[in-house]
Length: 465
Image 1 (cartoon, helix red, strand yellow):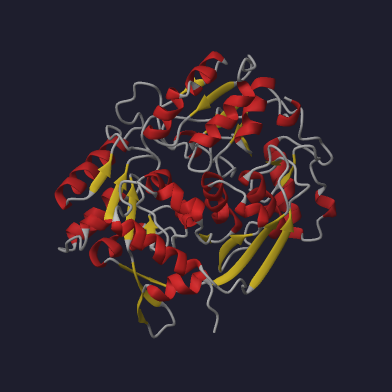
Image 2: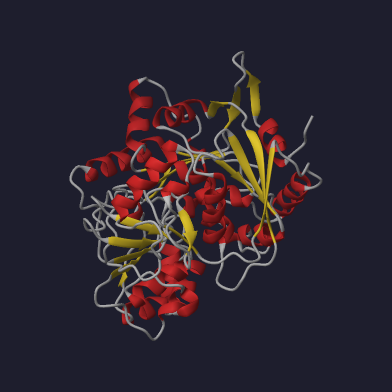
């Protein structure tokens, strides 16, 4: 019987093994955002039930809120009603809500890490597909639907089936300017957008361990785009240093006991899986998507692939449709394509280190006249820290927009949209047709590439800018 880190976390939270082969799992901490919160609470209320453990649930307003400077709420018709209901329900049930007026407000997955809500060894479920982000902290986490969120509110449990385990080992030393966004895009291109379906993915390897905690969260965030709902990285000293002193983390003697427990939990695990993928990333360059799926990715110095070289008929048709939508053709160089919009933000790449790296590219330069570039910090704390460091002035002096925290252009349901038939270089996690706006053409990249494209007005290699 295996004894992986996934095994240890999963087995520690099983309340009961059910007849259909699934398990009833205890949920340690639970998060909701504004798209689902009001509906989940209303369903609990209408059924005549109570919230079992309101102190174990947090709510965050992030998807529907406006992000332009001076915002007071939302500018999307009908959204304010959901935000008002969210406020009423959380007040009625005694659930902590991070609204836009809160000093610790931000995007749900960034807030859960910043506040120490997500901790090693805990089950932390969120009503969002990118809950896997905080697997970077050694947390067992995945996204839920609204009905599952209702069940958690009423019972503090969820019914689920333990997935198989895929172990991904990133080996080698990363080149300058290559970071987690490049690693995860490379992996998705390697295994495909559904390659992780049915698996939890555990990340390890020399290149992985060299990453900062913020970069590890970027990596885990896009695990969903590889088809897996669960991402895991066994915690190490970097994680403990990151979490110490966080608002909802243990303190004093309890902190010392917690760290001792986390170290034991991560020690001497089986380093194996049902599938093992080993990638030497020593020569990996900056990556960029060319199509309408994260798996349609190439090196920024590469060319658009030829669908005729794809043996699978369905994949060939997908490539052809993507090329038509994106306005590219086989053999075209990705570099040099004109860019009209740049978005630096989202739960994937809106942490302070992301903003620092982007600012280094644009410092002393100006955004191209043909480009609208917006920078949206992932939380109010990140925004304040960036302003203390003068990053906001670097962006503003370069001609970029400096926004308030929120999901912004990633979700495109809050007024921040890519204009029709324009090309956007984005640090977010999805490039599906229409994801960032009607007929928007989105390329997923790292903050460095996004900043370089803003300055040049074309898709550019940051090493050359």
